[in-house]
Image (cartoon, rainbow, N blue to C red; front, side, top):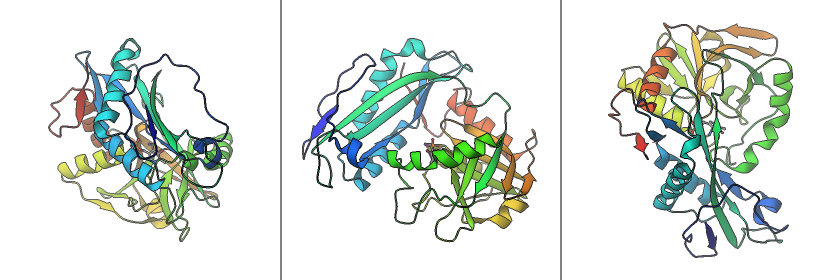
Amino acid sequence: MKCSNGDDFSQGHLTPFGKIELSPSAGILNYGQGIFEGLKAIRTKDGRIQLFRPEENALRMKMGAERLCMPSPSTHQFLDALKQTVLANKRWVPPQGKGSLYIRPLLFGSGPVLGLGPAPEYTFLVYATPVGSYHKCGATMNLYIENEVRRAIPGGTGGIKSITNYSPVFEVVKKARAKGFTDVLFLDAATGKNIEEASLFNIFFVKDNVILTPPANGTILPGITRKSIIEIARDLNYLVKERDVPLEDVLAADEVFCTGTAVEVTAVASITYQDKRIEYKTGEETVFHKLRAVLKEIQTGVVEDKMGWTMLID
Ligand code: PMP
């Protein structure tokens, strides 16, 4: 789907997965003007195909597009492109419990631009690929607090899914993985004292049944899984505080878990800061376990979706 300066996005069309042609001076190649989204189409227990809160992805893409001076497709166009892509690939949606069809919407400056500024033309496209579970069932994470590299600065683009947010963290994640960690947790740039999030997921801490998570104030990505877990926890009468989480809270927590479309809701078994390793509860009795079970039941159509979060598309 394309859009030139000032116009709306035109009607899109389906094409087989393949190469796309770009000018060497395309806005995305020269100035990184682009954002993306990530969702999963899964099979319900009845074998139907379902998306989870796709309007939230449409909204997040719209906000990101505004920040990067790009036009965005309407919510209707966004959802229609998702539906068409999934329906054309429905034989690739695995049976329930065997993974999902990962959907990647991309919006970027495809028109040529040499002087610094927004591109004159934009492309919105959606592709899909089947994926297994990010982690083996029952797997937990071991995280490392990164003390030097910051993921996002106040006033920067940490709060949107800008393409340019991701490659700057490759190096530290690679080093952490080489040491046996699953991923890194980033500290805030303003004070270097508060936990923000990981390279691809949000983080929650539980102490005496109270749930803490860093506030989505512009430097962390407002995750859709994060938002859903907060709503589920409040619905189950847990106290959820969205506030700064300094290192003292990391030391004191009983349990820690992370949330994201790719990682779903996964328990964190340990966090290492400098030479100190802190271990957390991950068993069946945890708050994490209860919250994950409710979200999974909604996402897989095992219970009635009172929240109206799911969208059946086939
Ligand atoms: N933080 C970052 C940096 C991410 O890239 C993602 C993945 N979109 C998340 C958090 C989790 O967001 P969501 O739950 O919407 O997938």
